[in-house]
Length: 554
Image (cartoon, rainbow, N blue to C red):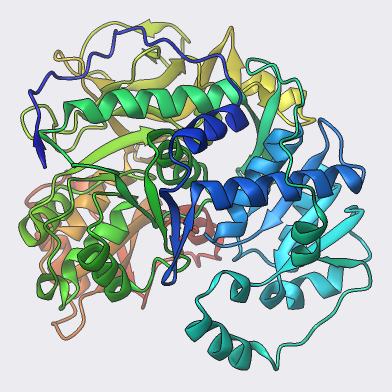
């Protein structure tokens, strides 16, 4: 552990963004870290040299299948070594990579494959039950099938094959991934790429409330993110000695996971420890203790469940240097609980798919971070607060308005969707759709999504504010707030998850608790208890699903 002289990160600093492609980023690291471990998966390490060979072989096989620059390559994979091989193979031949959430239904997979017009589709054999029903309606010329077994140590491989043997589904036009690796030549492909204009990935967003939109992110968009994270880590109070160890917990099919736990570690020459299922908390604790993990990025609910786990303090988590939360607002009590249980700094950042994703983050030290804030804009990125009615900039501090951002991470636009692109981008500014405030010290805080505002008796109610108060109740684990139509107009409905083994508060008790902190019109009119709240693949509460449910009038 190296003590570091703390210089707080400067949001106005102009960082030089390397004019390189993503495959050049990888090859630069691989050339200087050949024999070092790039990946760890279920007990097995893979070196940068071995990974580069697989990338070379797969990229040449893709070319042999007719894949050209600009063609789309789609994957349906968890966090596994094949994700790396396919991602960088696609970049090496100038193809556009897109990945789908393994939790998607057959319909959702087909929808995105059709929209992206993917030429190659790669998935695991255990997901073929989702692919078989749509095999003949998807546009992919080739479906490549791989298995987790190929990446497992010999001791685990046999058991895995026994467990999955009964799930034997075949497709009419599938190709074996292993054959493509074996048949491909171990030779680097050399396709000319313009980092500023060439699209590297299609990252789908917005699929929970309507038709999915593919954000076109260029090589420069993503290189800029890795560059900022390299700079940001220098403000840590202590830097790890030797090679960094990063936990790959966030799904790589989500942009937050792809940049923070996939690309950034590659840019640092780190070893990434892949976690295909982030719900297995004790396995992650064991991984941290045994492999001395330094960095972990995830979402608020993960950190809350991690710190609340009864075995959390059984394991030695002292190797952790920094944990970063994103995806939705990080509650103050989650920060306090996590830091108390792990003795590791937990900071909050902010971003969205269209920004590649990070635009704001807290300094990675206790003297600089501010709990309850998303931090300050990252270098090369500027932000402003806009009046949603007049579309003019708000220059007074602590005044809510829509957050607009501008910088090298902003997407090129939406794939085949000029109308949505025009609505999101205005003279290179990205309209985030989030209501935020800026303080006199230059820190920003997110109030809520514009679309989630609830108007009660003419007053604006921000769900985040009410949910934070509800979640602070000693007997409430989680809370979500939505509008509820009554004969008296719109009221607040709270959907709650109570803590196991404790008294379940009544409506009267909840209202009395909220009365201490909220104005009367913000207090829930109705409550409903559930075992869990609907969440996205990275743990964000899906208020849209709750709002879409039929609500009987009272």
